[in-house]
Length: 244
Image (cartoon, rainbow, N blue to C red; front, side, top):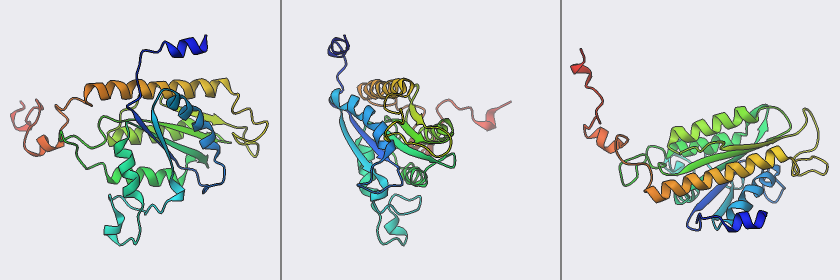
């Protein structure tokens, strides 16, 4: 029944591209528990024909700052511009983060700061550059904070111009205090039906919304073009001087 359900899918996602940015604190090749959870989402996408790429941010020399290229601001090296090219080439961006002290990782904060540094750029329609792309997040940890982290990440992405679908986050939480992490034997993580369901729904909602946006040519370019606003267009916003 499962195979029949998938084979009868009428949607074609083969022209979509997804980028997963893993914001673990562990450098390769050390295993990442957050990556372990994300692999479930990646597997669904790849079986649907999506081209998927994973970037482990901590493996790269990402400079601190909020400009597109920090080598123009006294940093000797900055790998962010090459990562940013991958972001712009993708239809789907998923940020992965562990939880530390109830917050997303410092690496995740840095990635969002660098995304913010590109947010003033415009696309060919004069809209902010991230328009037409969808975003989501995947969280793991051994303490509370999954919803708090997802709230922060998803707000940040939509503020930068990404579109957020329904139920755009998935998480696994271990027991409070020291204990097994997601990939550890006996954790129960990979078998957790609630987490697996949320990961599946997250993935398909990302795919469906990305498909809709790509087919529509992105967000309609009217009333949201920075270039037109700067040129004097006000898109029916009442001139304050004319208010009674």
